[in-house]
Length: 109
Image (cartoon, rainbow, N blue to C red):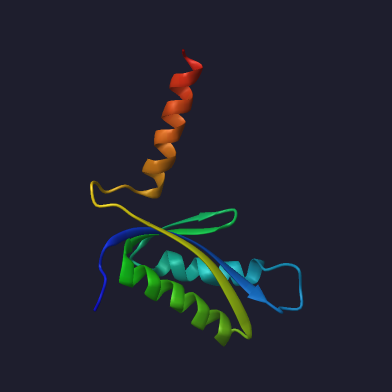
């Protein structure tokens, strides 16, 4: 069964055993894949948020792992948080903007 439920996934891909404390090369590789994807993605300081159908989001995360393994990373751990809702469509930016709006309203009270 294929799940096409719309979702927002926040993923942090963690390469292990790269020989360096820096993972910017690996983050760049993953970010390039995310940007080439037809899915809406947002890079942030601790990972990437991916918006799209569940099966396509998980496929992209799998592509992250495959690409990193092909680049020589032998072990990868990913932390993934996935949210779904059926009452409305909401982008990552929508979620942030709602909080910013409420913060501005609270300052004006």
